[in-house]
Image 1 (cartoon, one colour):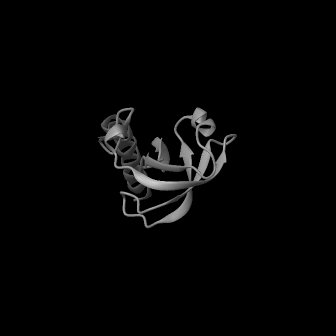
Image 2 (cartoon, rainbow, N blue to C red; image 1 turned 135 degrees about the horizontal axis):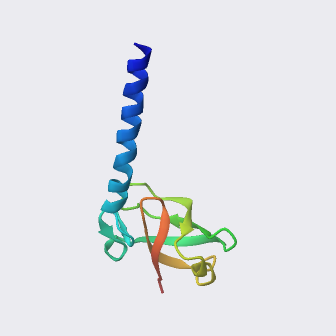
Length: 109
């Protein structure tokens, strides 16, 4: 009985490992959840802090497209060079991916 359970667990683990590459292939680079970064809706935000050494930015934002309510939170920057283009106090419109990484932004005048 113990051997049968061990075999079943091993088969399940092996089957689960096979599905990982398939999931990754569904979202090619430049896309998140099947939607290209350029097509993702943008949200208004106010930059509160920029940490260039860690590639993170703190933004007070409105409601996100995924339904998250307005709040202040930290996002990773897709490109480290963006830390030099964004300053505290900047008003921006931005898009994020499923891992809360800022993938696109523009300054609001």
